Amino acid sequence: MPHLHVEYTDNLRELDVDRLLLRLNHALVASGQFADELDIKSRAVALASYRVGIAPNERAFAHAKLAILSGRSPEVKQQLSTSLLEVLKEAVPGTPGLSLQLCVEVLDIERDSYSKFYLPG
Image 1 (cartoon, rainbow, N blue to C red):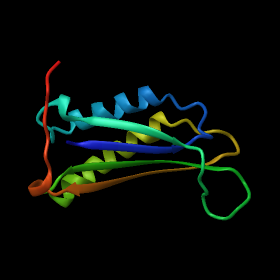
Image 2: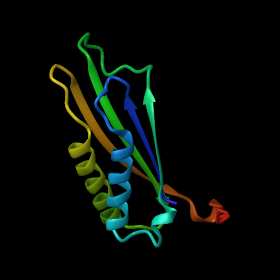
Image 3: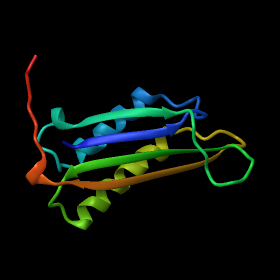
């Protein structure tokens, strides 16, 4: 915990996914909300099948979904969302003629049902 899932359309050909994930992880560390950087797990998936609206022109999106243990205030969740969106704005390159939407959502993981095991290497 936390778990960060990024989905992005595969027409974002200039996106450096490894750099994006590293920058997102840095933003989460900088938030001070997580005890150990080792706890932050992020992943990204390129979507080959998607549709944005109904217009025939080409469109794209990147959507970050952050799942964190429950109990944080709405203000903290908004700060996390805002900081991740800033990273997306800086790291996801625009392409002329390609409409782009960037979004972030923060979800709660119920503490009572979350389990974790760590096996050091």
